[in-house]
Image (cartoon, rainbow, N blue to C red; front, side, top):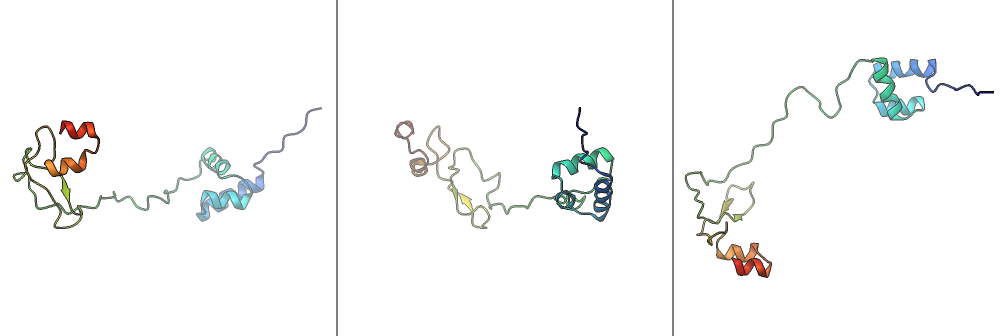
Length: 127
């Protein structure tokens, strides 16, 4: 004799789901209120075709603009591939700049900054 399968989604639960969804409760809150997992609620909402709601993570249709950093006073005209590009100071500070000394051949840094950058003895001998 086969046992009857009891449906998880009773008429009462379906009614509560629809009502709580319309009230704007979160999926987790609805799951706790009706005694089912968050995933069960998500699946049923999708299958029932309930109206979509805006994600709580994105609060508006306005695109998020990245914060603009203050750039150092160094301009493209001032930059040269033969100048050390070791950063000095906090990039957010107005006095941030790059070293600018003459580089070691084949390296992006001057002699003193190569000593700091290349700690491996093999790298130091190559510098």
